[in-house]
Image 1 (cartoon, rainbow, N blue to C red):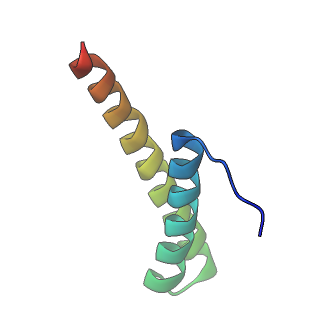
Image 2 (image 1 turned 180 degrees about the vertical axis):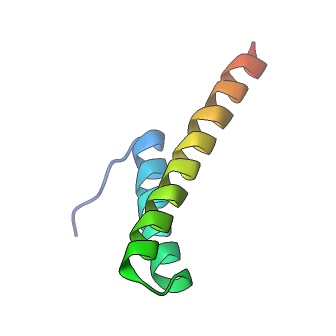
Length: 61
């Protein structure tokens, strides 16, 4: 099996994508709600990723 070489950012985006899809599928009833909630979760994951990365960058000095 080929090895995947992902950067930390790529791994975070992949995690956010897969997790958002699963959360959208298992928590909502209609397709419209699923898509909306999945996109909302993905946006929140990306916001948290960028926010925490800047916090670590600024805190590292």
